[in-house]
Length: 83
Figure (cartoon, one colour):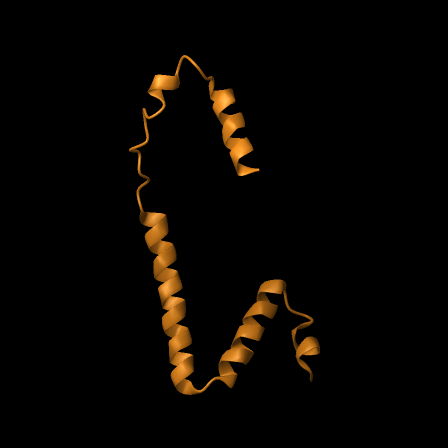
């Protein structure tokens, strides 16, 4: 059975997992350990990012411009900068 037909009945997530497993099996054991370490690093990074409290030191930073710009003006300016 070729790789394409092996994964054809699986969901997209299942196909991705199957591809990952196939590639990991091709690696020597020491590199398989590095893959596990890297996955653990990514998981820890994701958890650390989601547990971090947002910085709120910017609050009040635009106080001096309150009379010059509306919230809509500021949203438009921010949108222009992203384009």
